[in-house]
Length: 219
Image (cartoon, rainbow, N blue to C red; front, top):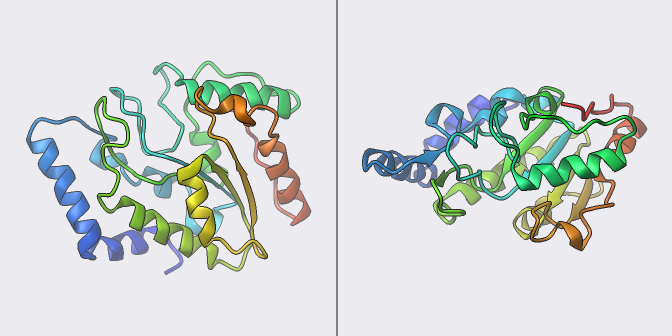
């Protein structure tokens, strides 16, 4: 299985993920707002094909405000206020990447289209309830995503911010892949070492060393 769709279809046949999706459908039927919408749950995989992945950025769970989450970790669609974590990512990019200009929107699709898989450890959330869908089965699914990527022969960069993302790092072969870890860009933790981490330029340096095109981080 060298493409995401066949992988996702197979996982949907497994009880754990079928139960997760059934629970989401039930909550929606009860009038609970669950983000992102169903059509965007697997958006990260639709925008970044398996064989094109060069960088994986792992976040925690989707934004839980109205119209924020659209299936890419840390990203919001144009017209939506830029969330604090992404504001901090832009601040770091300004100091890390020469010529980077802080954008006026938070849509990171341009990264995804270049091979940056924007993955959360949990792929859904209820409105106003951060991490409300933890332990529903998403962690098992995203563990399998990381294992599938880890098994690929071509090296890639994994950027792991925060405790939830770092747990995924235990599944990565660091002899094959380049793993960067640090604090989460959230205002609660960014000052503990996220600022000044230079993860974006380090990722590009590694990609250059293995003969791949750098990521254009400007969105």
